Length: 195
Image 1: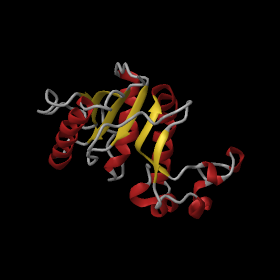
Image 2: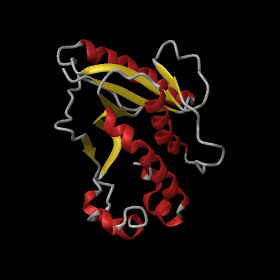
Image 3: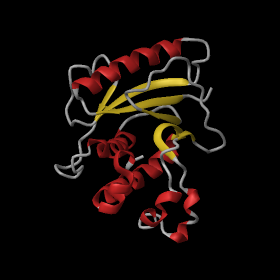
């Protein structure tokens, strides 16, 4: 068995909380079924900075939000910062992490598709590194390799080794914040910027 821990970030809004409750219900259903053997624990990473009334219903880690104004009105920037805190402070027994989002519905057991130190992720057709090479080179200099080394994936769904995610999460956070501060990058990537 190669257990993975499912982690989902949450803002604590009413709608987002409802999504997390539904997701956690279906996660438990899938984990109990045949084929759910790789599905380990579950954590809602709540980046509101304070517990809510659902911490006893959904396993929850409370993370601090970014300082006031740092997200520039784009609440999703709290996601990488929340993951950094969770990975540094929580006791996560599984060696793999499934980064998920509250609007994911788990309809059947999920196998651990990560292999040989390589993460498994879903490619998104609308993330086009080549199209925005000029902008991305501010954050991914040529010495780092061809722009095609940037995979057209989001941060979710991704199954990745916990140790690898712990190494890259601070960079994910810092680059996301830097891209949001850059008007050209912010305009080019919009709502998928931290992906």
